Amino acid sequence: MQSSFREDILERLYKEQATGKTATPLGYLAALLDRDAGEVEKILREMEREGDLRISPDRTITLTPRGEETGGKIMRKHRILECFFSEMLGMAPETAAEEACTLEHNVSDEAIERLGRYIRAPGWAGPRGMRRGKRWQALTLIEAAEGDKLVVSCVSCRGPGMRLHDLGLFPGTAISVVRKIPGNGIVIRVKESDIALSPEIAASIFVERAG
Image (cartoon, rainbow, N blue to C red; front, side, top):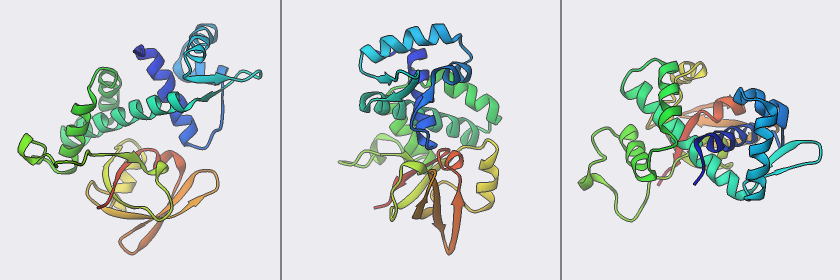
């Protein structure tokens, strides 16, 4: 089982990769994590031996498929918890983010699945309301492909989130991906309008496939 700090590393690397960076310098990663570079490198070497990532001779790090899967799962947990705390409970964005960081390492996949359903349709996630034969699958908008028909599940309320609300991007809004922009930007269609989003903003929007 991954330690919480190792999961933090994989989540951070996944976020960097989601914004279009093919590799992350070791020193930069240590600064993002607010840890000593030597300490981080020791842990990274262990994680490399275990198959979570690769360290290049120039000391840049890339995720393996195994590490990418774990990093994506942790990031999704964080986003769903953060959206629940901020949108459903009305907590301040900074507090919601801190609480999500604390809980994301221990919450179960089933709890996240049910919580995601609840965010999308409050009161619908009880045992009798669970859909049979189809698990709720959320992804960040940046992971979607051109032509995808999607439904917004939740939007981070920090910074750009408020602007997105002004554009009508609420949980339950139907959208489609018009095209991907070089550098990992994305153009989406909301109702009759096309909106271009940066990779950082797209990574903060959770969606699920329609249908």
